Image (cartoon, one colour):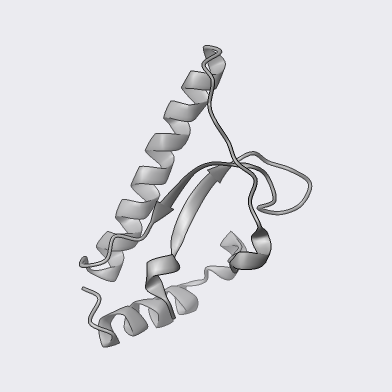
Length: 98
């Protein structure tokens, strides 16, 4: 329930889910409606992913750093169901995060 720690990452793919070195992280933009906050998070992640992929294609150095996955909780796309999204939005509204 700590929405200041909700976000997304662009990272290298490895055999371990979400275990690759991180290229960029994004935090949830608080102060927006839940729908707008998650749309903004997704838009920023996709845009940055495309920029990173382009930079790598052209041989630019893209710094990365290792992550400690024990510090967070990963929610897989298949777990991010409509019910989970609704409950998360309700918590955000209840906590006055919009």
